Length: 185
Image (cartoon, rainbow, N blue to C red; front, side, top):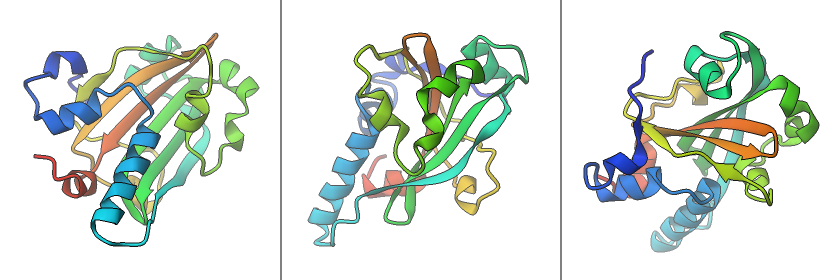
C-alpha cells in the first residue's frame, strides 16, 4: 500500500488540534498513553487498568521498500522487526511496528523486551535523538498473523530514533478505540 506522508509540523492548524497534539508530540508515547488511561479510569470511576503492551511479533524478516529506504539498507533486506499493541485493558489504543538493521540491533538486547515498551528503553538512552515526525491517514499494516494485528488505525505516524550508531524506525497507528476514549474529532 502506498502511503502519503506529510511532516507533522505542516499539519498544525490543519488537522484537529486534539489529534495534532498526539501525533506531533516528541515525548514518550508510552508515558502519555499510561497517563491518559489512568485519567480515563479515574474519571469513569473504574479500577485502574493501566497500559498493557501486547507483543504481536518479534522476529527477523524483510523490511518494506519505504522502511528499507528510511533505514538506509537495501530493498527487502532482513531486519529486526517488532510489532505490539498498546492496550487499555484488552482494548488496543495504538498498534506499532518498529524495525532496525540486524547488524546494529543485536548488541542492544532488544529481543529481551518481551511485553515491555520499546519506548521505555529508548527514552532512557542519554544520547537519544529523534527525526522529524511524519504522519499519514493510511492505516498501519502489521505482519503478525495474530488477531490484534488486524486492528484498524485512523492516523499513523513514524520517526527514526538514533542512539549512537543504532537507528530504529518506529511507526505507530492510532485506533478508533483511542479516538473514542479521548473524544477526538
